[in-house]
Length: 266
Image 1 (cartoon, rainbow, N blue to C red):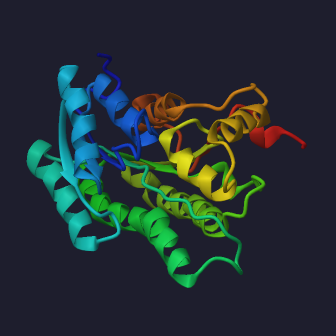
Image 2: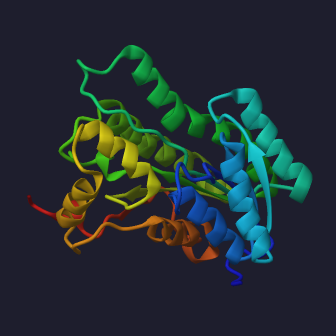
């Protein structure tokens, strides 16, 4: 194990994976633990949270699985309280939870819009609301929120609610960063591009109904300047950097992790 987060307590919200393999939150939780953090692995799916915590424990790290619906204020307050009870504070808050629904403004139902906004955006408001007083009392903290390049670029598929929620995360994080900069708390955003994780399967099914998933995955690889999508470890390593003291003078930053995709002209 490394030591970039030695003796730190990290909450990873969305620490499970929606399918077999490595999702961004799962990889980040394991990466944090490998660098010495005590990790509260939070997910709405208890089994997924336990899988991640078990991996960490098997590698000699410290972790506890915690089931919570991050859109529920009481459950969010309870998860932060659990981290404090276990390990005395919260040094790192990593918000990774998110869902995708396809459709433009006409096709998207109001209930679907509200659901995406609650999971992708309200959850971050609630976790920050609960964790910031703990960080402020300690005089330090790092918040790393996951957005998406869909916040700044059209990806060819109508994800109106997803794109809007991910764009809002940029302003949300920037506001926190500037309000709390003098209090020792940093807040930054990661904007992943096309990533080859379990989360892409369902959106691909929605976007390309009746199409072959592997063919669609190949097309996504081909879109990327490097010739391939990134993976969960690319996001996890970026999150580790922003959570660590190596980024001690970095706040209100928006780190794009996309293999150059947003730099393409066409």
